[in-house]
Length: 325
Image (cartoon, rainbow, N blue to C red; front, side, top):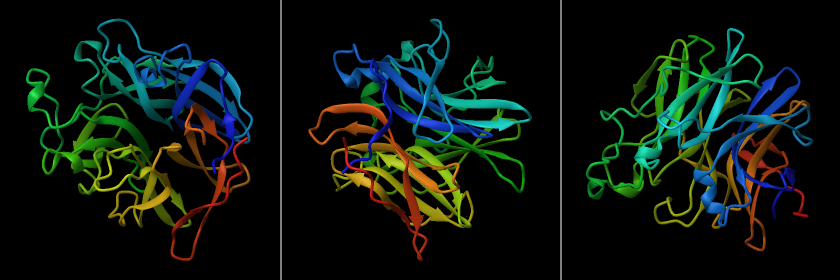
């Protein structure tokens, strides 16, 4: 069973996404690529940021594209990938993944853009603003690729939030530690900032477990507890064929976190990069992008919101979705 789609674009594949709420408007930013590409997997290297707005998370108005890779020589000239948006002192900050063509996209960094209205974005002159620190995290050697244990320098998908007690900003990042078996170095990397521009990279929030990478992190507060979501790509869960969205629980946004639990997983990646969002009815919903249909054809769209509940043990339960059209 799959939830129906809430956003589907006739001429574009869409996948990873993030949301920003401005009063009653939900702004959805998503990765997109043309359906003219011969293979949906080519989309990762022909990507831009799409943008839509809704007041109910179900009916979306498409807005002008938010961002795309820029001129040759810029730090994000090759790709712009998944990020997150936060508001501070009347300005919107978008932290996102960037790569360079001269590096063949092998090294990922975090870049920054700002906006006054969520429509017009200006990339920051100090980009990139966060890079992997070799004291804690695995680096990719461009000069000696045969020495690398992984296919890229994982440093992507920043999720940014502000600590309500200290005012400090935290970025949770998909990263890999620099020790241990190659197939299980994936962690939630961590960086902090006072102004969203100057960042200090710190040790990871999680210990390496059994994952190659932990993609698209998000942390939310529900009923007094913090839920850290992340997604595991196919083939990156050691001794398991499961893929999809998992979560861990803590009493503090920085942990320590419980053991991972499944939120929406399967063996074929039908849904991926799940996020939790509180709707206008104050109910919490699970949304994701739909990867494969029941007939295994590629979908490339955004799911409808599916309500969740929290059981007596604090576990998240996704309620039964509608059948796929």
